[in-house]
Length: 463
Ligand SMILES: [Ca+2]
Ligand SMILES: [Ca+2]
Ligand SMILES: [Ca+2]
Image 1 (cartoon, helix red, strand yellow):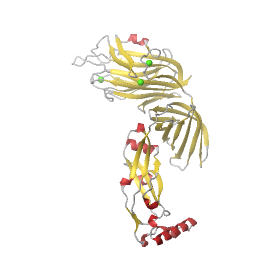
Image 2 (tube, rainbow, N blue to C red):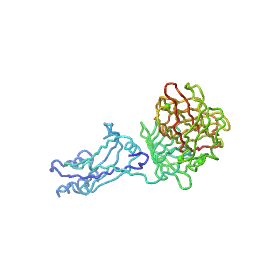
Image 3 (spheres, rainbow, N blue to C red):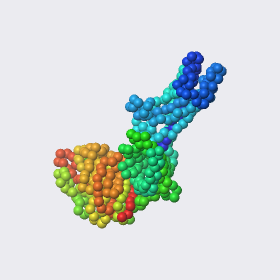
Image 4 (cartoon, protein in one colour):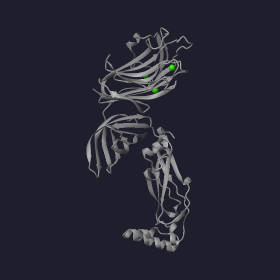
C-alpha cells in the first residue's frame, strides 16, 4: 500500500459463526445480570427474552440476544493490543450472525500503521450466552480504498478563530496554521502541535497533537477560498476531551513565485546571476524541458589538481520578488550521476532583497570524487550536512524551507533536518548548480552528470 494514495481503510468485519448452545446449565450470562446487579427494567426485559428464547430452544438465533464484536488495532509489536489498540466497534451481530458486515472508517494512526508497517488486530467477541464458536481469521477483512480524486492545493499560512468545548471547560482564540502539502500527503503545525495525514479532493484528514494532547480531524478547503476545520482532542495523561471548530480560516500568505518549468523558457522569471563572472566556468548547457529546468553541462576553465581549494564552476539563476517576512519555499530537485566521480551540487538559496545577505539554503551536494553526495543546508550561519555518501548518485528530493516568526526549518521529504533562527526579509531566490573540475592524478577525473529542478513555489506574507 502506498500512503500517498491511501485515503481510507475500511475494516470490514464479516462474521461467519456457527453458534450453538451447549446445554441449559451453561447458558448463564443472562442470570448473572440479575445476581450481580440490581435488576433494571432493561435487564429484566433481557431475562424475559432470554428465558423465552431458551424455552423455545433457539436463543442462539434470536435477533434480540445481541452478540457483539469489537476490533482493536495497534502495532504488530504491541503485546497489549487487545487493551490499548484503537477500538472499532462494538458491532452488534444479529440474525444468526451470518449477514452482519459492519464497516468503519479507519482513523489516521491506523492508516499510518497499515501503510508503514505491520499491524495487529485483536477481535473481541462478547457473547450473551455460553456457546461454542467457530471463528476464522479469514472472516476479518481489511479493505483499502484509494483516493481517486486529485488533492486540492491548500498549502500556505492560514489564520482564523477557533473554539473548543469539553466538560473541563471551553476555550477560544486565534489560530495560525502552517500547512504543507505534497500530492496526497500533508502536514501542518499550530504552535507546538504538529499533525499529518492525507488529502483527497478538498479534504485533509489529519491526526497528531502536542505533548499535552492528541487530536484528529478534518481540514476542508471551501469553494470560496476559505477553509474550515473540525477536530476532536484527548488530553494525554488526563481525562479531558472535547471538540474543536475553526469555522473560517483565511489564507494569509500570497504566492510570490510558482514555476513548474513547463513552458519551455526560463525567461522573465530567472536571470543568470552576475555572480557567475566570479567563478571558474566557461559556459553551461541548460534548458527548460520535460517540465524541468535541466542543467546537463557546466564547462570549467581549468581542471584542478587539488581538491577543495579552487572555486566551483557555477550557474546561478536569480529571481527577485517583493520582500517576505514569514515564508514557505518548496522545491523538488533531481540529481543524476553514472558513478562516484561526479562532483556537483544543486541547491536553492534564499537572500534578502537586491544583493542582500543570505538567509538560508538547502539542497544536494557531492564534493567527492570517490563517493556519492549528501544533504546540505544552511540556516543563518549554521551548517547542516548529512555526511559523505549519505545520498545515492541518482536521486530526487522534495525540500521545504519554512520560516515563521524567525523560526526557520528545513524539511527533506517531509522530515525536518535543520532548524534555527534567521532575520531579514526574503527578496531573492537563487537556483545554484555547481561542478568541481578535478583530476586527482591518480587515474580519476571528476565528472558532471545532470541536475534539474522540477518545481519551485514560494508563498509568504509580504512585509
Ligand atoms: Ca518557464
Ligand atoms: Ca515540473
Ligand atoms: Ca561524487
